[in-house]
Every structure is written in structure tokens, then in C-alpha cells.
Image 1: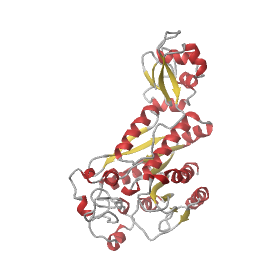
Image 2 (image 1 turned 90 degrees about the vertical axis):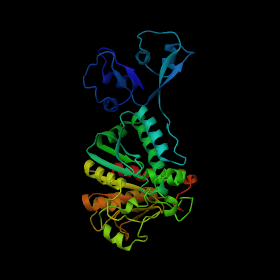
Image 3 (image 1 turned 120 degrees about the vertical axis):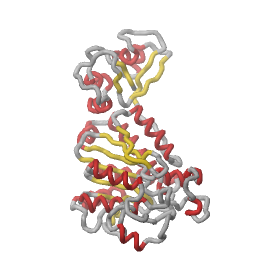
Image 4 (image 1 turned 30 degrees about the vertical axis):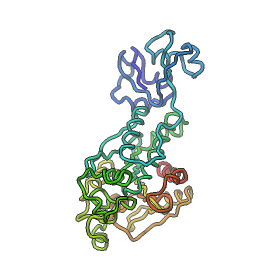
Length: 385
């Protein structure tokens, strides 16, 4: 919701008027530095939408919606009652987006635009581009020094992980604008980083079919003539992005089959050859993550170690994840070159690969409610410990 400031008002006053934490209003309006505002400036108030009222008087609407009259005067640009119609600021108390759908890169873009409109304290930045030039975006919010990072859809046919992260994002934003001081404390203590879709080209190939390749890659040939791409994990070039990182990459290169572009497992001719992997490496180095949680499917397991580089605190965190979710914690597996592997090796900080759900990828949307109930417990442990 946007309002126009009045002479002498302040962001603190707007915080009290709309019962929205001051920190959220400040972060939604970073250009507004003065304690007292001049008139005529646009101010964003997160967590509200405007609704037209044609039946009630302004005084009645204030009582019905439990709003101070000055909030109505401010929104409508007057200091006294006015004739209908007028606008009422309505607090958002339900999620804005629907994620129980085949979740493409277009779905992600549309949902992020909607959330950014109503929760402008959330920053959305492009961190790189896919092979086909699609934006790879990071969502970030919070004021803490500890930067906790989450990502989804490294693998194309695991796109349900993007839907899970976006559903959780919407619920977090609702909590920050509606819940108790405990959520405000979390906002002050942690900086949250989310890359919902690392592999937008690959996701679109699985969800939309051949046309997602835009005629630039012979994906059907790579897919051995098959026109369905349910088994496709790679990016649009046929490189597995979660086999692209310099953590014993050469071992994977030597032992992996196939030896050329394929729907899955091919680690590339060299490590970090793909723009999506490069974007994720550079983001970690730039943002200096305290912790990384990468969502994959399937298996209901949490992998948390790599070659003995993991810190002691990782075990404490994963045990709580295990307890909360019922997933099985696995310290070591015979696998290298993954994003979590590289992060643990390079930063010596907690990193986790979470395999959501059970079945055959892509997991069906019918599993989404159960997967989300389990996942949200793991995601929250990542913030709280």
C-alpha cells in the first residue's frame, strides 16, 4: 500500500497508526531518512491492500475495520469525513500466492512481483542469468549479521522445491507483518537469502516441454528422442548443475556416466562451466553465508557432512531437523561436486542438502501438502539454530 506523506508525520507515527513494525516500514522506504517528513512524498506501508468502500461512512468503516480515523484520512488524502466512495486499508492476513501448481519460471516471476508489491521490505535482485538468459533471482530480507541461505530447483524435475520455498516465503512475510515480537526479533537477528529457482531453463523444459528450449538446443536428441522430460535434472545444455562445483569435481568427472550432455548426472567438461552454477558460487562468496540449506527431492533424508570439513554445530542443527521432521540425517554419502559439498569445504560452515518427500521425480502435486508440512519444520530450524 502506498500513501502520500503529510507535513510533520513520521515513519514512527505510521508504524503506530497501522500497527506495522517500524523496521519493516523503514526497510520498505530506504530513501526516507528524515525523522519528520515533508508533505507529498510516497511512503510504502507493507502488509496492506486498498479496498474501495461505497456503502459505509468513513467513521463506521473505522469502527468495523478497527482502524484509527486518521489512517483513513491519510489513505484518502483528507483530514475530515468525505462522501463515498473511499479507500480502506485492509490488512493482509492470508497468503497472496497459490503454489499448488506446475511451477514454472513464469509462475515464479509473477509471484515475486506480487509479493514485492505488498511486502516492499523484501528485496529481489538478479544474481545471474541462465543459459537462455532468464533471470536467476535472490530474495532477501532481515537485518541480522547471520545470513541464512536457501535454494531450490538445482535439478529441473525437482521444481516442487521452488513451490515449497515460495509458499514458505509468503507465510514468513505474513508472520513479520502480523505476528508477535518473536518474529520481529527473528527479523532483527537473521538475514534471509532465498534463490527459489536455480535452474529456470531446466524447470521450464520439464513443465512446458520442447518449446522451453526456444529452438536453440536439441533437447529431444539429448533426451534420446523422448518428448516427455520427467527424468530431466540438468540445465538446458544437458549439464547437471549440482555436479558443477570444485569439491573433488574430478572424481565425479572420471566416474560419472554419461560422458557427454545428458538429462542427468553429466558434470560438464570443466567445473563451473555453466552460468547458473557460477551465479551460485559468486553469490555465496559475495554474501558470506552463515549456513546453506539446499532443497532437493526425494528420499526424506538430510545430508550434512562433507569430507570432515563440517563444523561441530552442524550435528546439533541436523539432529533438531531430524527430530522435527522425521527425516533421516546422513553425514556422508559417496558423492562430490555438489553445492552443499563445495560450501562446506570452502567455508567450513553448516551446509545441508534436504531430500524432500518420497517417490519418483517429479513428485506429484498431491504430495505438496505433506511435503510442505515436513519441509517447513526443517526450514525454520535453519533460522532458529
